[in-house]
Length: 180
Image (cartoon, rainbow, N blue to C red; front, side):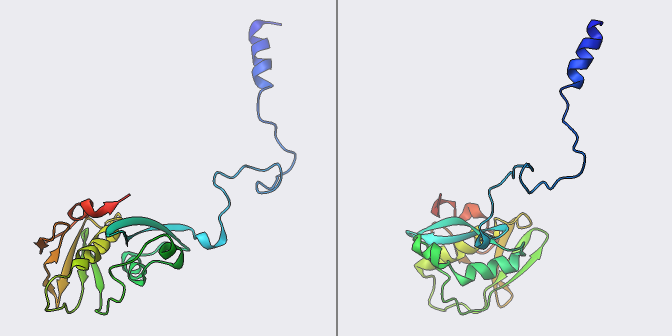
């Protein structure tokens, strides 16, 4: 037998055996899953939300059953942290928000209509509240900047240093408040 024939015989013997009939990949002898089994209440999709921990913004992942749009993600944020998240030390500066908050998207800009604002000026927790919204919406690939309006007019909102900004905001306007 020639050397080439011997090499071909060895290589041919190293192939994957073919089953006589199809087999279930989920059962014994099947494929090993690439991820651990999902716990039923974990959900299938991860939303990125921003809550408050120790007077700082904390980005957290939350598992939900299905992919949601930006408006729904904002609604989930406004509902506040879950009982498990509260037990983990998270809270929200948006809890008890009574004004209507609506979101529109146009070419990468999210415009958040916050309804009527208090005539009493900026409260300390408003920095965290606006930061929560900016941080949460910035996690979406279709959102590049966020602008706030009230009564359809641009609204000046406090940024991380307490200064008021009336234009397009990004997560960089609150990054010194974000903890890992």
